[in-house]
Length: 331
Image (cartoon, rainbow, N blue to C red; front, side, top):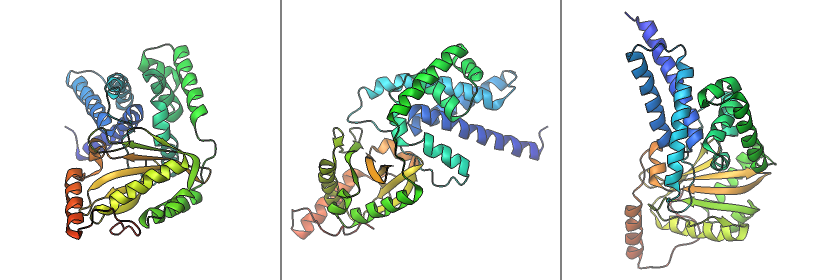
């Protein structure tokens, strides 16, 4: 019979293993929903194994192996789905501001950024797994070889190729914490006041703006490049937001970096913006509005209802022109 202390200890271990499983699966897939499916299946496999009398020497090792193999299979099928994805594909955002442990936070900033997850999309599934398990989760090559069912030499080659690919595309001029906080404050102030010249001053010359609506919410058909073009699009977005009632911009730590949650008048999520900061400038902006990629963060706004409210608002004022100037209800 299992005593209460043992039961609590077992539940704690399961929670730790579940978190580890999600950490691997999310970085492999770039999708919170797909990662949760993988986690559930990995834990179910443990349950089935123990029910069938199989001896699980290490719960953590068993789940890590199951998670990695399931994620590799899921990634291959997910990539086929993404070939038919409407518009640009971005990873689903995750909130990371509640992590207090300095070492865990440093690891998240380095391995959870939207920029890195996009780079990882260009790797093969096995390259991605080998690099993540070794360079991020510190698994020895021998253990990774067992997980991937390959020779240790092959695993080393997979990780090395992935590492070279990633290093070429990583930002070379990181932004300090102080610069990041200052840039975030200035960005939010400029957006709230519709200050396009202030926004333009924050952007790198080669800034890229990417939107992900998944064909379910209007978004950019393709990325927009260059400071002038990005500011023009942001100006349109701000005018659209100004038509909606009482929109709120809430700063948040997203994927270990700078983010903004856009909420409607009921506190439901409209979008998550991510800012990639390099060398004291905004190098990239991502906007995720696909409701399927936001649902794990809380209630998602009904975009069609917001548009309807916007039309009623404009009709009531008998003014068909979009409003400009101070951004009204944005807080």
